[in-house]
Image (cartoon, rainbow, N blue to C red; front, side, top):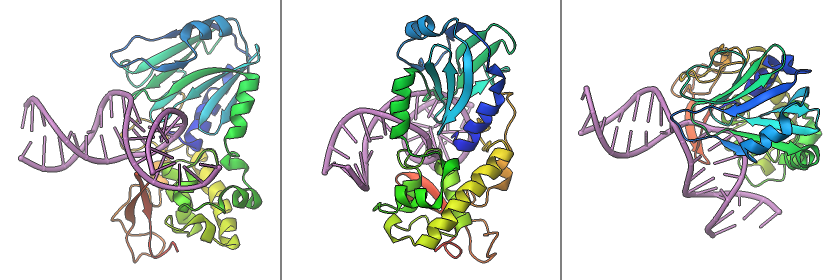
Length: 274
DNA sequence: CATATGTCCTGAGAGC
DNA sequence: TGCTCTCAGGACATAT
């Protein structure tokens, strides 16, 4: 589930790693299938031991450690991955461990479902991959949003999830953003008007910034945690996500509906979103 | 090229 | 109670 706000919270939580030096790196044996590491653990160790962390960045839904060797170490949490500076939620799904020269001495990667990835890329390869992704959702302008989405023959909700168009928005925040922008998730991109793209652009910023202030959303399964293993609080502010059947808080007339688009749940108010 | 669908993975919850 | 089935969705592979 980690989308832009959760991954940004992870990034901020481990900013203190900047300037630190990697002394060891290992997978953790556990009952689950092994996590995918690109290219291999041996290569990762050979290329990163002794390297310094120059910067802690975010790239869409990925956490990016820039190393003094000019390589880039990437954590891609996908559904249930976490980066942690403290004890993980459980030991069974702890997957990876990096040790450092000075405090904080350890970074853990925990992933219940194990769909996440850890990758090491050269700076050049990283740049090539970055340009394949769309602009970061927090850097959007009205013009950029139109340029990336307005010609598509797809529902706007589906288009917002396409990381090659816009990077950082996932299933939860797409519903929240469209509700605030008062645009139906079913609307085809190429039929959306200019003033609506303007509203959408503002809603993207508003929702993502609100969610970052709340350190993201920890849903009922409790999986998502910040780097200190504390839950976020934005789930208490969701306007539509996972609220099917509840009264719309804007019109107070219609109820929130759930529909399925591209095999993902979408939540919206038929009366408020046109 | 654009768009649609299948796959990976685990645990929670439903239904019998 | 314990089994089987379905669902959750981020990113990519494969199909149309």
